[in-house]
Image 1 (cartoon, rainbow, N blue to C red):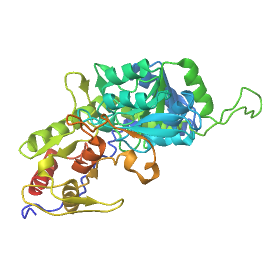
Image 2 (image 1 turned 45 degrees about the vertical axis):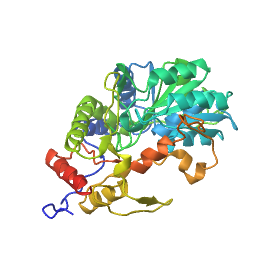
Image 3 (image 1 turned 90 degrees about the horizontal axis):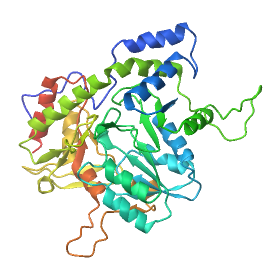
Image 4 (image 1 turned 90 degrees about the vertical axis):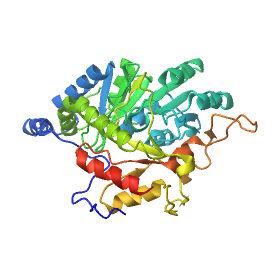
Length: 405
């Protein structure tokens, strides 16, 4: 422990909303004009701004990113019993929407370069499951996947790609915004995202017919009739005009938030450079993340003994070594919040019997059978990445992490 460092008086969070004032103006406008439902100027403007900023033709405001993913699955024509390839190292919402339609997620392993879906594993997945026609790809912690390779593989096999850009709004790959690579795409304005509405999300697509379907489905599938006429199942998924007011006030600060998040990432990278750790990676020549969360992974030879059950973790201290459990517990003692890396979906009890495809068959001397997602989960953690964290507070967090080794 560090004798000269006391716990923070005010908690240093992983990621919280950063508000600026314009949000309240647009909320108040909705209140004063009595547009308190799922129609209004705020929704119209947020959809327009999203299309303008991201370069997509259609944006449909919805209640959350999960709703956008669910309707994307419906647009892709997924039926009960279908298999769908999904990112393995992600939050459960990425694939829960597949299950809502009674389809079966098949998990595709991760690669170390971006911590996202491995194109080699995806190609192998198509060899094993040649009838699959939908791929759901997530951009982890704001870093784009290898979009060129994955898009090419999907096109080769005639598969629809759905891009889950919930964590990567504002990130670019070869200058192109994430959330525009799939046939259907989802973004999120959840409370901890790069910009927020407290909740809310959007479905993005260049297909105007699909966007019209989503608008209908998300408002309980009402037909154009003088009474409530329904010819198909609908959902109460439309974005609130009040929530849209918050998002509208946040959008002018997107680039500012990204710059602040990048500064946090770079301070960690510099401050931890002498430790046996690496930051969550990206290829700076072809992509620019939004740096939503700064993460690290501990070198294999610097890991102390760590044991994890489904709900508990323990470790054995060892000089010169550490593990995510030790670092997270130590940060918590000083009133700072970190988080484990997302636990891979194939390791979740609810999905333990689903298919899981790694990049290599194994069995030969030059082939690896390593479960990459499980390895990143074992050795990685998310660091406090809140925009309101001061450089001085971050310096203290860096010293706390150093003390664990």
